[in-house]
Length: 182
Image (tube, one colour):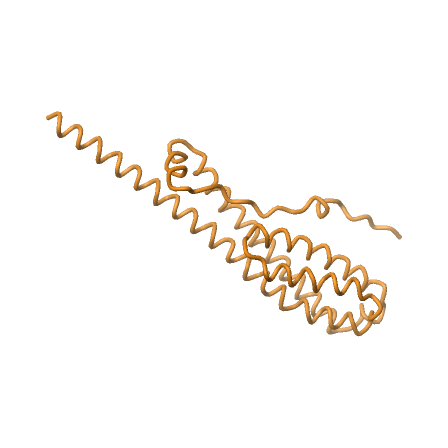
């Protein structure tokens, strides 16, 4: 009788640990999938940027530093090795893109160019998709992080080295409300 109780307790512990481990793996895979979705949208963004830069270059050739900045951060973002590095480089790319569009505002002919307007529209659409994918990633990272921190799954997470995932956050500089002056 005692042996049966001990065996039942051991089986319950084994099944509980296995269940928690499998849930951690599932959550981790969902977070990785969420990042992959962000990555797909970022790739589309990276593919559009050279066309946009070339279009602006034709009108604003003397705005060399702005164009170089966009190109530099696009390359850095594309060659990022980790999600954290990609998040940081993409934030810098976003700021460079804002500067590029601010530069474009100074050229009335460019603002009326159909190719530029099409590229700007496509980029706007992709930025919207990136925001959605980033939200999905952050939601899955939040669920994963909660599970990693909850007791008793935090013990299993610690044993099997499941650490918390970083959120895709907006840089402080990008949180400021833009000033519109006439």
